[in-house]
Image 1 (cartoon, rainbow, N blue to C red):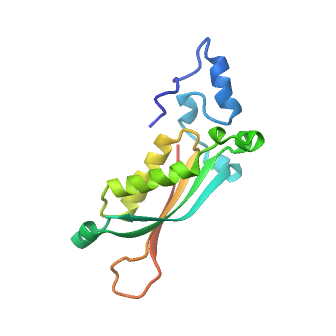
Image 2 (image 1 turned 180 degrees about the vertical axis):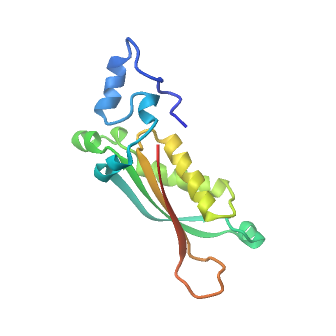
Image 3 (image 1 turned 60 degrees about the horizontal axis):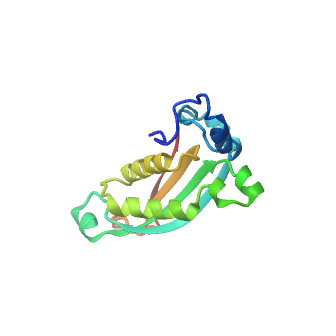
Length: 162
């Protein structure tokens, strides 16, 4: 799921252009996207999205797929924010507004039986669409889960790195 617009590795003549990406804390080549050391996430910057409400059609029961229900999504986006903070420039960051719309559109456009599958697929989409992300922690809550008992919510939370 590497960024198709990035070269596999640097080659002669690309150093100047790719240096701009590196200066912004963004990967310059697909090779840099290949793996992120999980220990590096301890000190990574984060963008946090909390409580994004999405109405979508996920569930094991046919009525859940037909009628739909509310899901509450929270995401932690691991990335470098230094260049954006120093330059006060959104193009050097990950636009959390766009990420919210990506999550909403993705969850509305697809139907999954399990919120585990919805979280996995949505996380993979975010990593594919936003090359500056080192990792994504995604939580999907299902407050209207058909449990038959009073509860506030059920949820899954996953964390995926490149």
